[in-house]
Image (cartoon, rainbow, N blue to C red):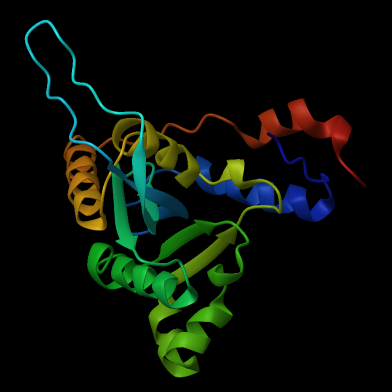
Length: 219
């Protein structure tokens, strides 16, 4: 299902800004990091599954038990081939601020400036850092951060969605019974992809946008 936003001047300027950002050469001291979150339903087997046998696949009963939900924060550096995934109980502003703190203080501690690409969820703005940390600590934390927001109803411009799609297909598309198992599986997945330095090759340019979308622009 698509959600089509009006291609207003604000939409176009935000889109142009992101496409120009994605077109920049890779600079390890100024990483472009795309960030998003995903909810995951935990499911446990109602009966023990039958393990794989020679000539017979593993078998799993169609019934399952619900075991709650949790949240995954996903940050991906497309040109650096690095992703960071953190599993949390919730996705409240305190959880989001803690995840960004982890990125800035641990993952990108030596970066001169970090470009964070996000959508317009209400927890994604500077005021949330100020509410959680206080103005002084938030200002100190974010001094190296440049925020870049997708246009409203245009989360397709956030490459974190591509990475989440890969995570879904390669790791999450099965029953995971508890948060501990989920964390173990996600950590193994991101370690493998980071070791292989799997990046994202973005090919949609500003010129492509004007060619394909110009007739829909709202003056």
